[in-house]
Length: 134
Figure 1 (cartoon, rainbow, N blue to C red):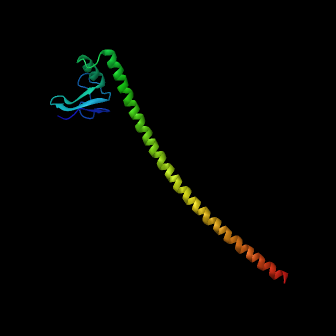
Figure 2 (cartoon, rainbow, N blue to C red):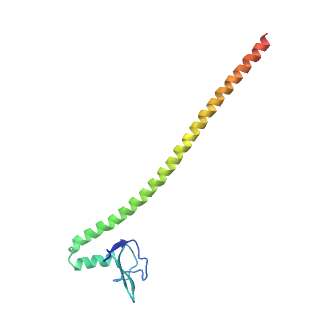
Figure 3 (cartoon, rainbow, N blue to C red):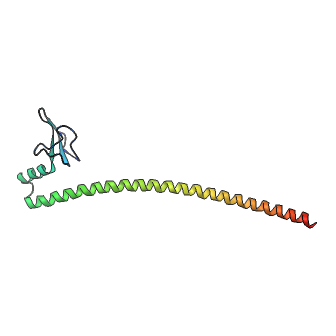
């Protein structure tokens, strides 16, 4: 038997919960199909009702667990979004770091070039003054 999985939204026909026909995710994908119906999905509301009817948790406790589960899904989505933002920021930061190194090297080369030009100008000026003084 293939384990049921939790999905964000149904992807195969009829793309709805078998119990209430809701199309709002998340849903359980049972990996089963009915010939005249299609893929069997179970929405979170029907799953909660089923769990309560089967006695897995009393009504009030089931509400707390359901809210905690919904919050966990929200937090997982937020973590995924923040992880993606961190990755993008890290990539941008690394690109800026490389660009800073390139500019620093270029500045070092230009400072060396300026020093050489100053030396040449100074030498030419001294040579010119020596020629004028004699």
